[in-house]
Length: 217
Image (cartoon, rainbow, N blue to C red; front, side):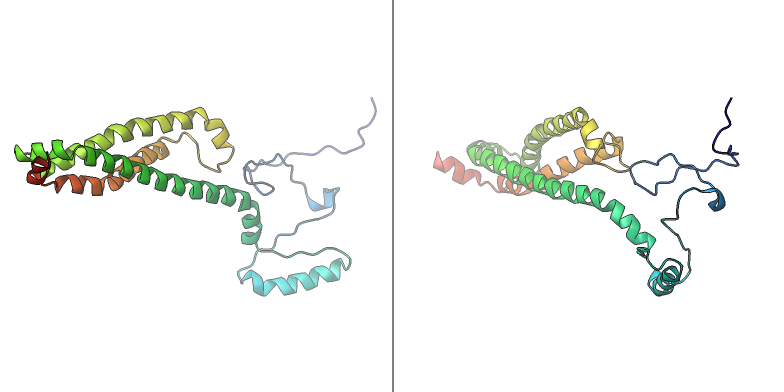
């Protein structure tokens, strides 16, 4: 058998996964001693207790002495991490903007629906108030009407999230698309938005004057 052109390596330890090339996943790497490496040094990490901005000029000058023709770029670890996190921050901003727009449209839609419903039921509400229905009861009924619409909508949204969870997972970092806590928070947020949107229609229903409604008939 022919002799191997490269010497054998002895494994002296195993380290935990480190994400330094990309944040989404940790690549498979082998660490070797500098004297045994076959590649040139392209990145040099320096640990210092002083602010990076104060150390950068001295580091750049020293590297220029070692490699006058080399391309030297000095950056802090925060800058390096921020550059790798840029796509994830863009996705987060994208979801935040469209999520906020969705919440606004939901509030406007719920408000318009309930305001129209209260207006159409003014006579019925006036009759109920004339028969002794309290303000609390009227407000509760309006809120229940909104809840009967919001709960199926929230459940349909959760079902849609489950259906496209694989696609959503590719756009998230360190967040599971089907995290139970997130799904519960989303449903709670939908119900809270519904309650806020129907606050004025409920108040308007409680202020209906039964005498005016019956006189109009």
